[in-house]
Length: 70
Image (tube, rainbow, N blue to C red; front, side):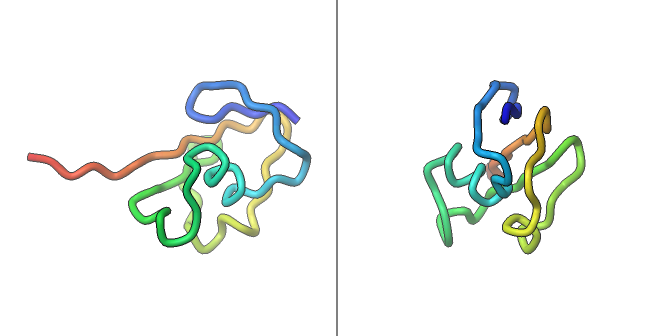
């Protein structure tokens, strides 16, 4: 299926979870995901729901990184 991650088209297997898509996009998983957030079709997905939330054809996923600054 085709989805958009951070504005870039991606081909992923049907049934891919938000967690798997984020890990594939960033190359990070588990505790290394600290500081990451995900929004699916403009709705924030709670981290506790990443595994249970599956992507569908033409979904838009935004993977955001928290940055500290001043």
